[in-house]
Length: 233
Length: 233
Image (tube, rainbow over all chains, first blue to last red; front, side, top):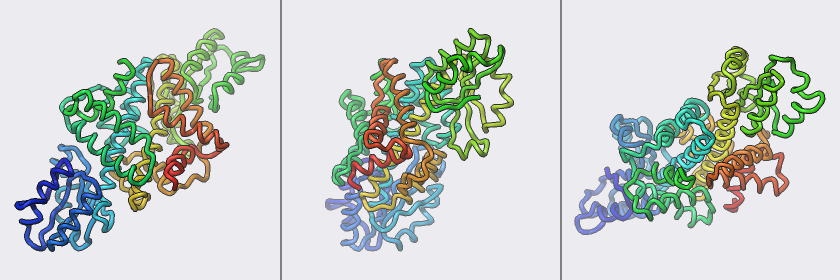
């Protein structure tokens, strides 16, 4: 069961003389929880198959506190027999498991699409709350209203409070990792010849955070701090 | 109690010889549920005050079916004594009333910010689902996953289903009205010297719908149809 930050790092663990592909027993299963490109999953799945090993994509949604409370949402895709074998393990770790079929890359597509949606919701809230602030309203009151009514989802409640308070510490997820996900999603869009202007917007927000040396800032700061900064507040 | 589509139309009802300002009794209350510019609310509030009448901003969130079921969310701002007087009426109409203070424009700021957030969430979902579709995933399955997990808010569930199915009939809210709200929000941003690139994006999506003669299409089609169209699907 592997959860690493980057495609390259995962390849380093899998390949080479002491890599997983060489040292795992036949029939063993690599449960891949990393947020990586769907093409990386497809490639590693194939490589494990050639060694008579198995690969199951299982990326998760949830910050560290959700993991500690076994409240992750887990997405799977890959061989159906393998899903059955590891079902009980995944159900222990998460509050629910959602399957997306046999293409090993499918769960990674959902994960990258989801992280894009989270970044887009941060940009959305940051612009809305800044608009309200400029009109003399209290950002937190506005955030609470939306979090309790039409946008009463965890993402809007949790990130909404941070964005309203401009509270960017402690760092939960780095801008550099958010950018990596925006880059992987943008690569999918480019390969598919799909213009995605909102994806490009959050990509550029985080690229700008990196350009300013803020790789280790929270991705909320990378995006919402950019909106405030543009507005001179 | 007035709910009209545009600032200009509301002014027509309020001004002139047979307008509300001339015909309402002293002490009477104009409960203004229209989605209008905060400056219009501030101006009309002042004009009613000069006639010893009252004006209360009370814009609502909810599509017609929510209104029929008394499940609207109502935002108020204006004179506190007037809010107390009409409290029982508003509570009959909505499931909850949220107050934003004494500035008559404040509730309109929240309403316009909220409609921007709804349009932004449509753009978000449309890009995410199109990305997934291009990778061979089922749009509805992806929409259901997000609507049941990290984005389990009414907006994502209801619009998510429509966007996943590309179901743009029957028309619930016209692109022309969505554009009007994007225009009013953009005017606020401009007046406040606040760049708001995501607001500009949805503004341009709906402006393009208007340019193509699709004023009467649903705003979901104006936005999500634009994303599909850009992607050649």
